[in-house]
Image 1 (cartoon, helix red, strand yellow):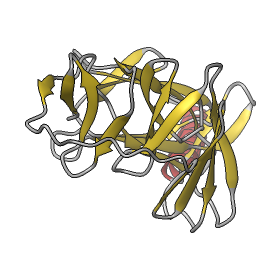
Image 2 (tube, helix red, strand yellow):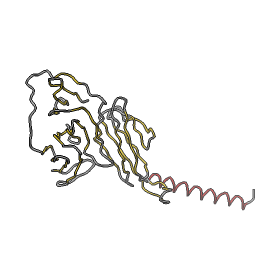
Image 3 (cartoon, one colour):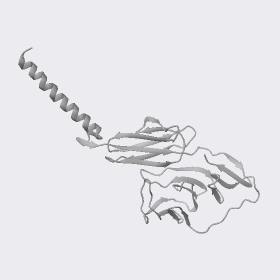
Length: 248
């Protein structure tokens, strides 16, 4: 091997080493080349936390399951994009949201509630159960005030929210509109979901508007209902008596 060839190999090795070292440092700092933007961009991450175990799909690809202990799933090193994220569990309503991952930031969806397709129904063991009639169209809970009209539900934050989606005191959002009259709205125990009675249907819906609101029809309803947070149950009139629908 000639001296000139040895020097050429040496310089080639040095250049390759420098390129690889640069690429490793850039990757370690959380950057990746984005062929859409034709430049290096800072990567982001996302997390979803559910009330039960579920399979997690991102852009229709199975990415894993929520953890056994905490029912959360995290995915890092994501290019800044909008990711269609879906949670599935046999016998449960599917949850889906378009999650926006921002360069250099962590996007958190910490209040996912999956409900069974059918809730168990049993007679309520009381003949004196009452359905309080509340004509006041305001429902206050810790840090939030909900008001509703015949067709619209609005929430005002009365305190700063310390988890995503962040809100400041005084923030106000229209959460949902219904074509049929809204008869009643009640808070779910986590204060991030609500029950809505409208058009003979009882709906369960989230108030996190990011990437779309998940809403499920959970039962028919032709009379007032009561949600009891202590037993996590819905009480309604049916078959000439009071029945209880137990939530998980």
